[in-house]
Image (cartoon, rainbow, N blue to C red; front, side):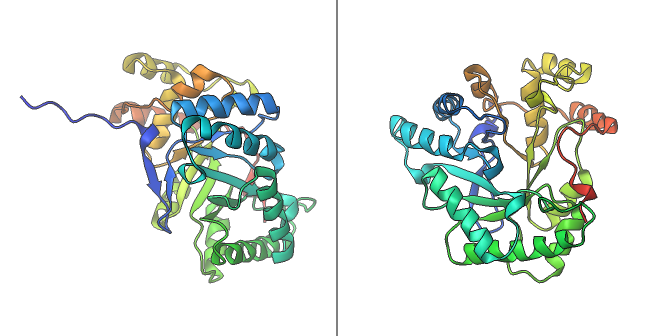
Length: 303
């Protein structure tokens, strides 16, 4: 009797973006990891565990620390710059024309100590210091995307995308005849809050959805999702952790993930995903979305 084919770990899988760029399905998030020592340790442990994608943002205030960590530890593991995938994001306070956006991009590159990033995102559809219902948000969003397109067309970034964009924000962007379709839309995504309409739209437009807050409010010490009876039951059944259940649930929907941790064991655990969730259990996790519990900022109110 032939053996069943081996299951590939999601930790080694890459998603192909709409411009042909390959992005690891699992990356290390760094939101709220602000201390240099914590970043250094996390990157060391992550590279050792097999992570090759690292996510940061200008507003996280840790780009310098991430850059230092990569310079320190890539040689330790025999890796070069081209072996890793780095994402950073444009601050909502830096929306505007090419001069403003380029200045912000160059500052991020300097902080990271890199010549380019693999993915550069507009962090939020709204602009800092503007009310969410201010019509200038849309105007600035359009000009900001045009500025990112120019940086991309000049070959100074491998891919560009957005974060926290709704279907409305994306459709408005695509209707204005921009030459580049966002490669990624990074949004809050977990069993308590999943936007199925948004995922369907993004798949139709060949935009990869990447999920942050995959453990719900865990980054803010809220473990309600990880302690949910449905999640715990499935984890026990599959002999995995509740965190691993949440990650594989997203990945089986073709949603990339960027789990954050400053703990060596959990960092390794979050990329050790060599299992699949049965359909009936996927449906049980999907049903948790009826709770509609959101932990991060709400972009739907932005004009």
